[in-house]
Image: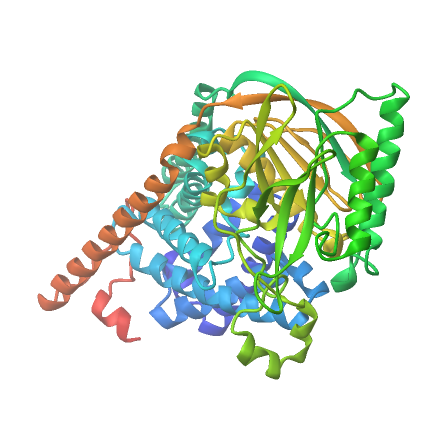
Length: 534
């Protein structure tokens, strides 16, 4: 099999990379962990026997290009240029991954080393450039797989490593298999990896320390593209109207009276401190329910032509209280990187509006309920993709987790389901219930194991009240997953360094690479020094 794959022309290898990447993008769209394992295996089978590093890089670039063009195709409803630019940028990380995978194949223990390469490259594109774009991470798909139990133990990075390792065992069985025995060993490796998810049974949900009754309001919006929120104050009026309907159902006895109510991100589209009409509408809604409302809003400042996406606790008696400013902002959605350079070249980016400024502190908001104070851990939309931001909420003492989101621009695309899946992975990682409240859907409640208690329909105004437990305690993932991720990357770098050192030693001694049927990818009897020159 190795010789056959090695003999594939470079252009055919690149076309296969495009096909595998497209399948990988579809896996993220539909949430298929099994297809993802297959795509991970297929990429390794293409690049490990590649005759040269540049063929591996080209194949990886093609893989990443179609993976992102399909996986985040929803970005095109905002800016088509941004979609292609992002796909090209992220494809460069996939090219790097392919080169590292080929490099890792020069050792008998390449399956775990190759999985470590996935971990390292995911870390890179999740942090760089511009704070990264951690949207298409393998670990998010684990929530619907047997590996979901790893999430509270080793977090999303650990789940990424496990999924990647399962894929490498498949590739190992195909590439170096010389009979049924090798296939059985490869299958056994995949099954062993998947069974590690059973360890999650050892991590219970956070200890309950009481409960709180929470109202939620999905006010609905026109939806679709950059004008998804509609005319000025439309979204605000919609949420006021649905809050008043909720208040009516409470007064009639149809629903219990909540302790507080949650609006989504962009529940108001204008600054309630600067715009008198918006201020009056917010006060009207809060007065109707008679309890604090956690509103999502946009505020002007702190500088000229700047803005912030904020969550503000609005008390019916004392007005605005605690505030949290969104830390992780969507590039080309909330702010424009290198704006002074890009705006003259692409005038369409002006539609982003004022440049958003990120907050700095964790999303933890105390809500005074009179006889007690409840601490809410708040994540605003895109922030669910960032490990540190998520973990900081519970580290800072959150008793209850909510996600405020504005998906109005992306209704009818795969973005909505992708974000909800990521949030489900976070619930399993924290072992906490998460209440999701969005402008147009999908709002809902996620249980501590990542399963879904209920969801609200898209394109409809809806509201309700739910009793939620207050929880304490931190999972192992919150405590150590970040350190384990860095340790895994360090071991991977060390392993690759050993491979390089051994290759140089072989080259200096003019030793041909013999290959190992038991694990190392054979190179058709040629020396590795000769491989690099082709």
